[in-house]
Length: 94
Ligand SMILES: [Zn+2]
View (cartoon, helix red, strand yellow):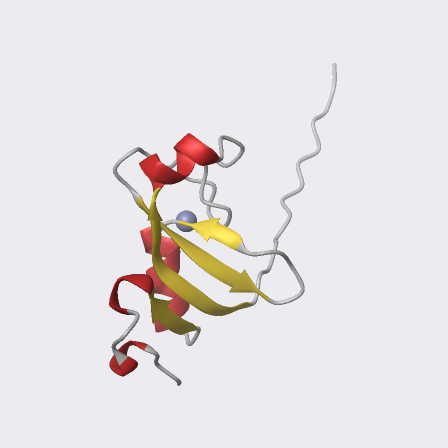
């Protein structure tokens, strides 16, 4: 007989800004094979996914998926779109 204790941990990240459309994950993976999952929700990236870069307070930058990037930006993180670097409109301040 045994008893299994179960504990769930909550992790919090404070995303201050997101660099949208950082890289196609397929391209990123050719250079860096150490990251295979979104660093916030741990969903596996696929070759076709767009990877975004989140700037997390007190931590290194995180490679994140579209769902997490959208959530962070809608929640108030600043966003910056690499595809439209010359467009002032893309830098949004809350
Ligand atoms: Zn994610």
